[in-house]
Image (cartoon, rainbow, N blue to C red):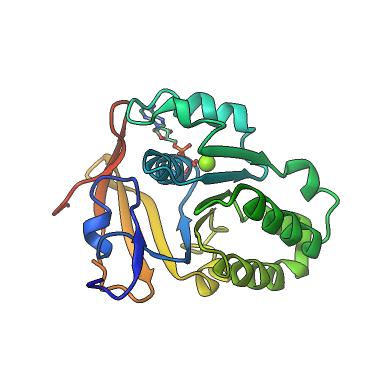
Length: 227
Ligand SMILES: Nc1ncnc2c1ncn2[C@@H]1O[C@H](COP(=O)(O)OP(=O)(O)O)[C@@H](O)[C@H]1O
Ligand SMILES: [Mg+2]
């Protein structure tokens, strides 16, 4: 293959041409940005695009939204084929487990879910809330989790919000193979949404900010050649 890697399509119009056709397979990608920038939408489209090609996707939600809500919101985006829900896009909620599990138990649970479903596409949304439960064990947990995830024949998207005064969650960004940053910015009184690829190992990727939209028909789309 041209870029030397097998790749998985992003499911987001405008993104694949920026990264030599898709995410390196296997890899772990951080999608970072403040609340409401579209991290969940971006990562759901990744799962549904795989399901359109008969791949299996696994969505693991931590503490942000219950799976039924995510399904409900996503079912309003026309490009997503709802019949994949529960079949080639499987949902798993680890909110309860998080409250009592050790880092090792969490990783074992996630490993087991991937093994059980044989998912080629995995999303953990959001990963950063786990910090509140693990404290000083969070950094080694992220390191171990990312290394486990890289051993699977899968691309995993981890979503994350940054803490105040930093742009993205650094612990996850160091360990991940790729970092996609979503931001809002106010320019001349209007708020614009931007996507930027900060890192994509093994890939000659586009740099700089590109504007994106989220619409009911097409979901999350990145405008080529923008801004
Ligand atoms: N069906 C939709 N139609 C139009 N806009 C949508 C739709 N779904 C989500 N959005 C937009 O996406 C934003 C939230 O996206 P979401 O993926 O939940 O963000 P995050 O996970 O980063 O908090 C909403 O605030 C809204 O602007
Ligand atoms: Mg979200």
